[in-house]
Image (cartoon, rainbow, N blue to C red; front, top):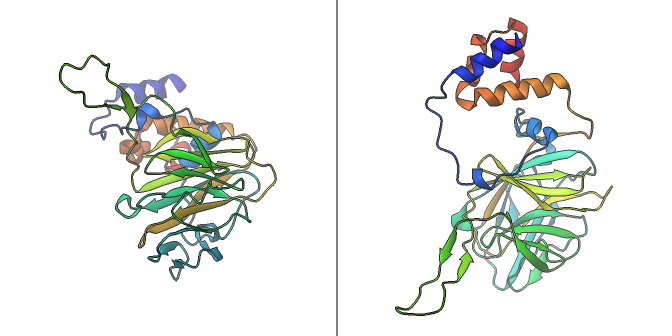
Length: 285
């Protein structure tokens, strides 16, 4: 049966598949735990982990009635942050942050923080990542921040570069500078509290570990900071898993669904499998 299934999956043309994302070339291999989590159905939108905290936020942030959207009021010379109402101490967890690129301005940072991270500061700066109790990714410049310092851009792989303009007949060689990536509206925050790592997923591509050696056993919260009036950030908890290794059946199902691709997820009834397995694949998609 395994050979028959393999032939069926590999013998069908993917016709109608969407063009690959520009972030695909920057993707890093995802662990089996992360791959299963990303391919699992999201929890309900009313989950308590999808709300911003009404107590832990700058006075310049206002929350929607459901608590899932935080909007920064116009304020001069102020950097303002907000963190999620619920944090985690263990397991692997994925949240979705929706923040329109048109309403980010400078110093638009997404990341995680401890409970005692400052959520307001004077001047314009990266507030999340501005101290030792938070870790942030600045979306406009792609810089990583922690302890008030930035040491690199994320993702760190070779990216498209822009060449500086040279004067005619100049003998100097052209210098190259990395052009910051334009990060789309939706970003997935991936916190593995067991491994002590933080990473991000953009356009379906896991961009690798941004921060490692996060504190163990400490409650960590998704957090954002902004300096732009009118900036609105929506939070949604998608899914999570424990430190236990994935079940073999779940890994096999994931492998089949990946071969099928998103455009053929509804064709599981055509697979050369018993109806029980066909239904299992359909329920997991």
